[in-house]
Image 1 (cartoon, rainbow, N blue to C red):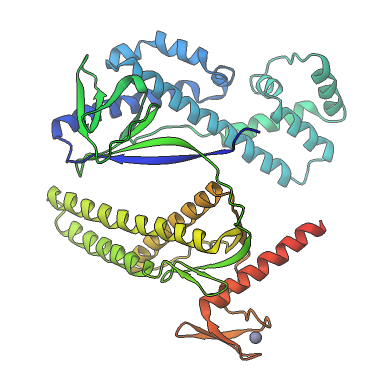
Image 2 (tube, rainbow, N blue to C red):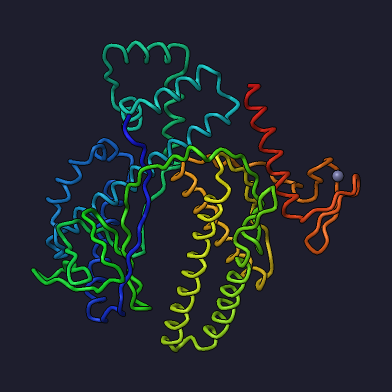
Length: 440
Ligand SMILES: [Zn+2]
């Protein structure tokens, strides 16, 4: 059996501020990269181009013939990556569109089961789907023809096809990007050497050099992100990692996820105890920064300093979060982790809004990292229904009160650290979820 792998992103950073001249050369590439992508979106993002985008050689050839590359003076190592990057977005957009249409079909109460069956069939069969959208005659052979004849025999094909075309027009969005802050780069366009990386520019044979903070070398397609306002740059490297399996990870645990303490388990163990401090430091910084930024909007250097400070605090918070998740997994040795489902964001005032949005954003980060690490260690992460989970007694199920971090049950009188009580409820709900699942 082939080893299961998981995709992970590794980051590399510049060691010293990138020279302005160097940054400009990189920005030129990013800008052209963006132009090429928009060209591809515009030319191939529509319904008529659907037959061309799989597998994409036609697009590649037509893009060569378009003369755009020569016109921009962009080296082909960048040009074709931009083309395929945009093509990937277009394919993704089609997948999303089909998903949305499937949902509409499911929710439309006027359809008969036969209608639904037909629509799902033609959505899946790309040959059918294309010919319907392009209003071309359908050519199917052998087994597929038999299947098509069967699903289309009892329905109004014309009416359903029109419905499908309408839905595609409604859901297929026009694509465009204004972000010119990065580009993909292939192996041919860079070389690691001298504790840094040499990157090809638009000038023939002239490469710019960026000293890096680490000495890792990769041989694959990378993505470069530019932060011209701070003179920084970031390299994203996708790497495949084998999924780890731990024979001794057997426990089932419930987690409460908090703002002060990152995680509290059902047995009362705490991870990320200083999470709240790091978090409020960042929030405070952003609040003050925004205030002074509004006052001194003219001074770009203030903006730069602010951004650098924010990046530093954020990086520190993220390192801390990752470290604490690792520590939790190693100590708890879980096979299954239950967590409360994230609530919908609520409305709040302006100051609250800043607190709130940073909190939300970091909470999203915590959740993403937890889910990524669970996948890496083949741990099952399951979300449970969270309503009322912190006000219910985990011992008898009755309502309780919370004060100074302590939960007191009004029914049985149990007293417990409130987050532990929550985590125990998470575990309880998770377990009953599993049992229901077995009954089905
Ligand atoms: Zn109770």
